[in-house]
Image (cartoon, rainbow, N blue to C red):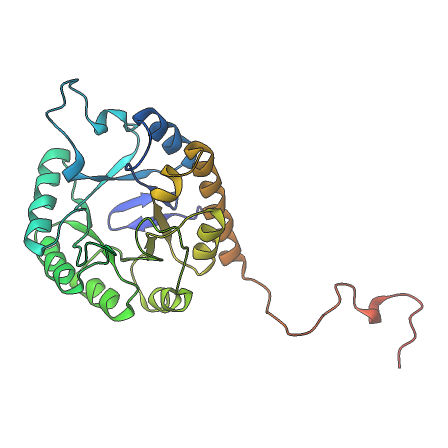
Length: 261
């Protein structure tokens, strides 16, 4: 049996769960949750890395060096700011990976589609492996793919809401049409949300608050790990057809002594 791997541009992973670094009660708790998640990639907000900390340590010191870092442009409200932040991330971390976020609304944190498309085009042309955070819009997702993005990251629900997959139908359409990985980003609150998303056939999940805001983040990270695996396996297995009426597990025609009409 071949290994089921996730390929994003030139990068390859056996885990389909990507985790974040924000909202944890401590760096130690974050590190324990990362380990429990089994993730191989972690996203970091470049604007939250304090290089002037008096202790001499930054968030980067608490991330397992075996994890691949996916810097993000969280907090950017224009294409210009997002491109500049991505360039700073490349200089700081020596990676071409970037999770592109251009926010259009401060209350809902929904992405600005026009700004995201503008920044994505510039970053792709500048040699970045771009993973854009985007609304669950099949048209914009396809446009980002055509610009050369290595994946698309439609939201399941507003960032940090924990509402789960609010519109599974559009996510399914995005996946059906995409020729690059579809990574559901934002809104996953618990393990059942993760399994449902993966059963739709998406390639991976990125989550932060669902783990970090749990009462026991490390334990929730482990639950999310298993849910992602279970959802992926169920999708690959192919679920049974839904039926309106009962269909006996042991058909009557196979039972000895049953009279058939």
